[in-house]
Amino acid sequence: MLKQYKLRFYNFRLIIFLLAISLIGVTLVGTAASDLRSKQFAGVILGLIVMLILSLLDYSWIMNFQWIMYGFNIIMLIVVRIAGDSANGAARWIGIGSFRFQPTELSKIILIVFFAKFFMDHEETLNTLKTLALSGVLLAVPLFLILEQPDLKNTITVVVIFCIMIYIAGLSYKIIGGALLIAVPLTIIFLSIVVQPDQKLLKDYQRSRIMSFLYPENEEYSDDIEQQNNSKTAIASGELVGKKLSGDDSTTSVNQGNFVAENQTDFIFAVAGEEYGFIGCVIIVLLLLAIAFECIRMSLRAKDLSGKVLCCGIGGLIALQSFINICVATGLAPNTGTPLPFVSYGLTSLVSLYIGMGLVLNVGLQSSTYNKEIIQKEIDRREDYL
Image 1 (spheres, one colour):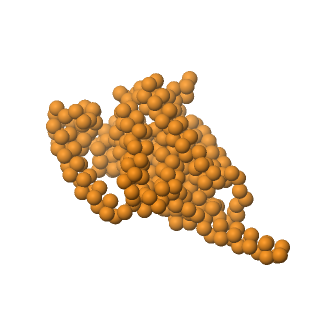
Image 2 (cartoon, rainbow, N blue to C red):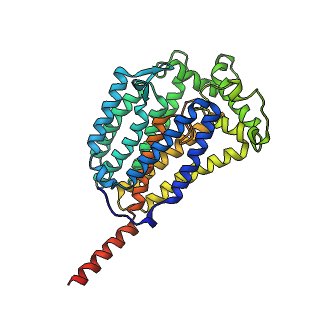
Image 3 (cartoon, rainbow, N blue to C red):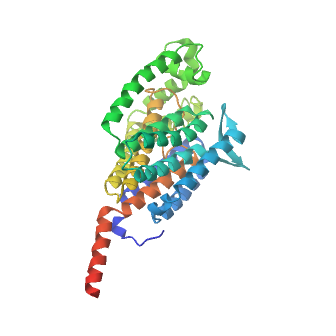
C-alpha cells in the first residue's frame, strides 16, 4: 500500500501548475461572488491534502478495489436518481444537511480508475467481441443513470473519455474504423431528428440550446443565446490586460451588472477575460494545457498499462472539460454548463480532480526508471549476500 519513493521522481512541476491554476480559480471565484472565496480556498486545501495522501499510496493497490468502487459508484448514482436534490430542472446532488455533493463528478474519476484496471486485465482479449461487449455493458449502466438526471453533457464527456482510454489500451484500428462508419451516420441522423420541433430524443431545454447555437439569428431562441453573447462581450471588453489591471471599474460588467448567470461556475472564463484580459485568458489556457501535458508525460513513464490508461484518462478529462467550457464562453459550442477544471466554483468537482491528480502523481513515482533502479538494487544486494 505505502512505499518508499525517491523525491526526485515526484512531479513538482505538476504541483506548481496545480497551485497556480487553483489560486487563479480562488481569485476569480472571489471576484464573481465574494462570499464563495473562502469555500473555494477551503476546497483547494482539502484537495491538496487528498492529492498528497493518494500520491503516496500505490495506485496498483487502489485498483484492486475496482469492483467495490464500481458498485459504490452505481449506488451513488441510484441515490441521486431516487432522492437527489433538484436545481434548474435536474436532480444531480445529494444533500446532507447544508452540505451538497454532486456524485457525477466523482463518478467520472471512479470510472477512469475502473476501466484503467479493466483494460489491463483484458489486455490480451481487448479486441474480442466478448470483452468489448462486457466493457460496453459496464459503461452503459452508470451512463444511463447519469443521462436520467438529466445530465447530457457529462454523459457525452464520459463516453469521450471512455473512447480515449480504450484507444490508449490498444483498440484495433479496424474496430475504430468500423465504429466511425457507424457513428458518423448515426450522428447525422440524430441531428436531423433533433432539429424537428416534435422530437422526443432530448428535453426541450437541451434542444433549445442546440438550436440557438445552430440558428443564433432566430429570435425564438434569443434567450438561450443571450448569456453566451454577453459572455463574449465581457471577454472582449477586457482587451489586453483586463479591467482589473487597467483600473476600469465600469458597472456594466459581468460581475456588477449580472449579465451572465452562474458566472462563478459555467462562465468563469468570461470573468477572467473581463477582469484580466487576453493575457489572463492565455495564462489559464496554458496552465490547463500544461497540466494535461504532464498527465500524458506521466503515462509514458507508467510501469504498466493501467497506469498509462489512468493518466491519459485524467489528462483527457481535464483537456476535454477545459475545451468545452472555453468554447461555451466564447460562443464556439452550445451552452452546456461544464465547469472549468480547478477554476470554476464547485467543491465536488475540485476535490474529485485533485483525487485524479494524486493518482497521476503516484503513477509518476512508480515510473519504469524507478522500478529499474529498485530491481538493480535488489540484484546488487543479493550478489553482495552471496
